[in-house]
Structures are given as structure tokens and as C-alpha cells.
Image (cartoon, rainbow, N blue to C red; front, side, top):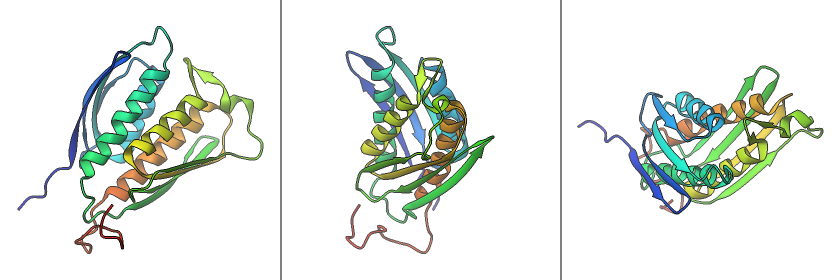
Length: 203
């Protein structure tokens, strides 16, 4: 019997945003993303490609005000999609980690799909001003907010450590690539495990 493909429909409509799409966890890395925020499109494309997730995502938001609502609501949708797609998490490896370099930047993502939310970002002792600057209106803080909201709605532990970097683009690129690979690793099925990977018996 072929295994069931783990997937979730994305749908969220508020007075501020209208978001739709689909996440296939057991995918191949194909994407069709248009959020209205070009930099975020780029980051999510990298995340899905390197995580081997198929991701379709269309968003319309009140960008005339600012990008906060759209950025946050997309993170809510993506986090919930992973939570829904993974279901009871039976047989998954649960933990994943990956360090990724991007030119002079490098960052690591550590994931625990354990049913408990926590989010931590650790930066180098001396952070170059270029890391916290904006590109195309998007900032490092926007990226941090996205990752925090994603972790909260996926109900996972997510720890990010930035080791080096001279500009915000490359630092966030390393983070999103690392997160994609780490989430893929954590979501993989371990054929040796038949039940939920928790001594509690539930995630």
C-alpha cells in the first residue's frame, strides 16, 4: 500500500489579508509563491526548495499600510499547514538541525517537532549594522518575527544561531535554507519507529 502524502490546504482571510495555497510535505521542492513581498517570496522559495516541500502560496495584504500583517499572517498559515500536514506525527524523526553557509554568512537551525513552542535567536557578539538593515523594505526583524510566528503556529521548538555575516540578505538566506533542511529532516519518517516519537505517547 503506498504511503499517504502529507499535505495541507492553506486558507486565511481577514480584513487585512487574503491568503491561499497548499503545502505538500512529501514533495520535491517545487514552488509557486506570490506574497506581494518580493524578498519574502525569495526566502520561502529557498526554504521549500531545500526542504523538498511543494509550496503554492498566494497572498494579498494591506501593503499600503506596511508589510507586518502580510508577513505575520503568511507565517501563521505556513506554521499551521505543517502542523495539520504532520497530523499525529506518528513515525517522524522529530528532531532536525542544519548549518548552512551563504558567502560570508553562516547560520544554523535546530528543530524539535515536539508539540511545545519555543523560539530563540542567537546572534554574534558584535552584529554588523548591515545585518539589521532593510532590503526592499524587508528587515532582519521582519524575518525574526516571521520565524517566531511560524514556530508558534507549527507548535515546535526552533532555535536559530547566526555565526557570521556581513549583510542581512545573506544571513536570512542562510537561515531559511537551514530551516528548510532541518524541517525536512525532522519530518522524515523513521521506518524503525511505529508510534509517536515521545515518551508521553502524544505530540
